[in-house]
Image (cartoon, rainbow, N blue to C red):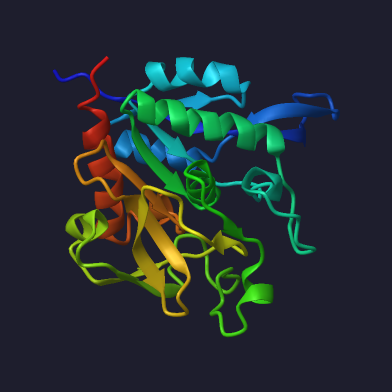
Length: 250
């Protein structure tokens, strides 16, 4: 029996009040269960990576075969050298600093990376890129990128995939329908990354490495884990990542 790859899931901390905490707010490590379910369905073993200190990142990178950078808060504008826009929502600089270092160490250790939504933005910043801090404010003709009329498992707009990209090789289609839960977007693309998909309004929806021989790395603005049951192409993204992680040499 082949060994299943260990997949790290990044997390955040939230103050939660439950019966178990005797009605007191307690700081709790949080990651959506859907990420764990998806990893299991694709043949991996999920483990939660708690938000830590940057100097701990190398340990987690070496422990895992692949890492999923999950969704959550806005990225602090300090991390990419800008002042905050008035529309910026909750940020978590502690998480940003840790995960930026985690990206760096994951690459140094040749670990597979899949990044979604916030994680996708974090990935771009890790490579020296910037963030559009509020799409509606900065793009007059933007489509609706924060769906409220559809559930998380339903697509709300389409993206066009570059036929020369790795992403195209995975999904096999030039146009796919995706879900959308963001008010920020990719600005200047980080060095070493290239655009793999765009929305109809030009917003960058996916990034991958320019180096085609490098270990798997893909970032998507959408959440493929939410769409995997309805669209085989979305599950293909996950399984391709898991397959790449299974080849990790430790």
